[in-house]
Amino acid sequence: MSFIFYLIVGGIIGWIAGLILGKDIPGGVIGNIIAGIIGAWLGGVILGDFGPHIAGIALVPALIGSIIIVLIVSLILKAIKK
Image (cartoon, rainbow, N blue to C red; front, side, top):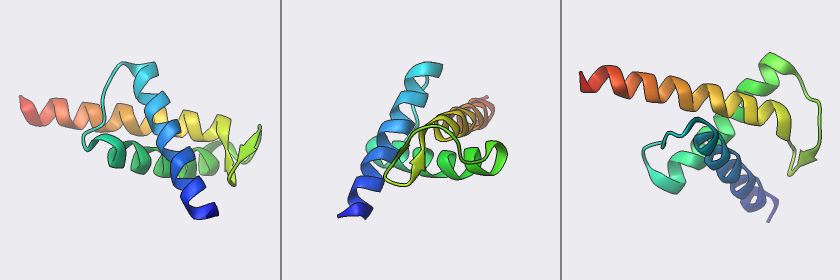
């Protein structure tokens, strides 16, 4: 059950990062979950483990890491379309 909650929180964080930047991640819900989980890992590596935690995910670093991931993916997709 905790794994499912982890996926839900990762998806919400990925979705919020997309809303903040005004960009969509390809893949819909699955893309948001992947961006949220990878962003949580990246944010933890860069910023450490601070702020409130839900399902083992530190929310502040996860959100910042997810914003970085969404930005990188959108720049790569924009470069491919040209």
